[in-house]
Image (cartoon, rainbow, N blue to C red):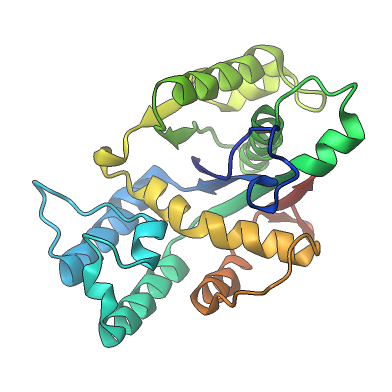
Amino acid sequence: MYVDEVGNADLKNASEENHRFLSLTGVILSLDHVQTFLNPQMETLKTKYFNSHPDEPVIFHRKEMVNAKHPFSALRDDIIRKDFNNDLLDLIFKTDFTLITIVIDKKEQNEQYASTWKYDPYHYCLAVLLERFCLFLKRIHSIGDVMAESRGGNEDKRLKKSFRKLMEEGTSYIPSADFNSVFTSVELKIKSKLNNISGLQLCDLVAHPSRREILLENQKITDNRKDIFGDKICEILQEKYDTYKGKIYGKKLLP
């Protein structure tokens, strides 16, 4: 499972709308599918539109792409942007992955559990994400591990510490033995953006639209700014969310 976060875990500014919500999105992929389909198809797209080269590969990053910043300046051309968007949507549609997004309303969490809460928002989100990944792996009788994109020194230490704590102690719902029975490592894998990990890039592309959809569904935000392309991604994601016996486990709003 490749993991991407949107927002931050800081509680100091939890009342401000721009800082109120934190989400963790996990994209679950077979490594064989990454090697035989996702990676070559993604690299083909990069070469076709942005002249990506193996020695200096273009790395997909949603924010830079939306704003058509270098190396995505070609997207300033409306015709090229339209063609690229269609190809990207087709890639997301054809990629075989399972999606889980956990969103926490830090303001509401603070107000409800200020005196009793013992976890920071990031740890809480990660715990719920890993619980659902664990249950998914047990359901399909498989094993897996977890990778996140590096965010730098202290951030990476926080990620690793939180992951290790969950592996050692488990949660209220999943004992550590269950985690360790399906996860191949007790350490979180962290890779730099420069490593050109296609799974992390796919996760970056779908994390923000998925979070936005969950917040809209729960009336946490209003749709003042239309995101037509994001809505098209969300249409595809409806078939990607982890679902079991008619229940959707791929979307969760906390608390």
